[in-house]
Image (cartoon, helix red, strand yellow):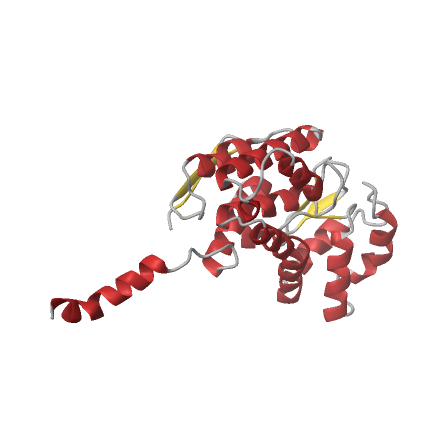
Length: 257
């Protein structure tokens, strides 16, 4: 009789207990991921304020811009402006497409200076351009990273670790790109999908990520790994649940909920 009376009370509790942890595609978790990346890329948690960000950070990739660091030298900026122009012909950046095609693969600003940065900031106020940035971020970086992480049996933290690596190093297969970093990690540890321990594997991945970062002068500060991602991992926060506290480049950040 007692169990019958308690059933309506216990059922929701039991359902909540058995509910699977959300992954990085959950809107709130995705927003957390974007704040974490922005803390490293822009020293701010306000990632939506970064649509108009643009500068040359002297990493050999030309201009770095927008919410995810699209680069004039690595084709993703070119593709972004092409998508924007398909959706809104005659936009303020469309005239730079010939120059972007020519400088792709280099760090050159030829044909872009002196007005490109000003026009980028103008375009960033346009919701069509903002949505194009969101869509290209998802297509090139976020979706592939999360898909691979889930295939490897990783939860939200591991999915973010993959995403952040793909943002910085690109989705390629050479040793300094995401594919090469993952290959190095797999040589040291098995991911959960292959019967390995999740924490052990993520430590191996972060070790490989640090080695790749140190190979490039512009990325030799590894605090986004050491005092951010590794902190969450050491705490066993594999679901990337807030509150989260971390440091990047010596600056402290907190996401309370």
